[in-house]
Image (cartoon, rainbow, N blue to C red):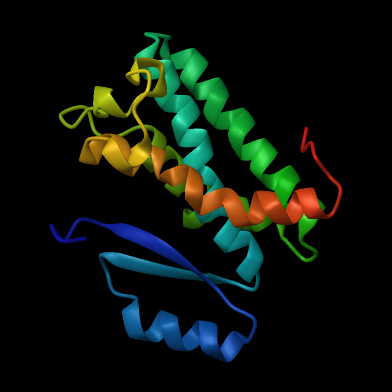
Length: 165
């Protein structure tokens, strides 16, 4: 956004009028605002993509190839959709193809080549005995993604559905 390159975002709404207000406020030629009547789906995509990104990071850290990473991303998106639909009513299939779903997942899992994922953030290279508060900033940032998904996972477990797949 800061470099005025094209990007997009998805606004989940309950009231179509509210979605239209956000779209009118922020939509411009280089920043497309999509709207969808699916607040829970948009929020879950934003949270659960971080778990999939950790899997993609494991692939990088273990030196696994692009096909393995692509499989992690594909299966991760599929499991995100299953989880969302299992625990939240009204989640729409289309949400996962919006910028909050597939686009955000790909962007999070595949950073640009000149800016590789910090190797210190990969749990497979995490020094034994170090806790998150004592982590280097890149590692804390990467591992901190897990905390974004905790409320959704806890809700699912409270409802007695321990496995998504």
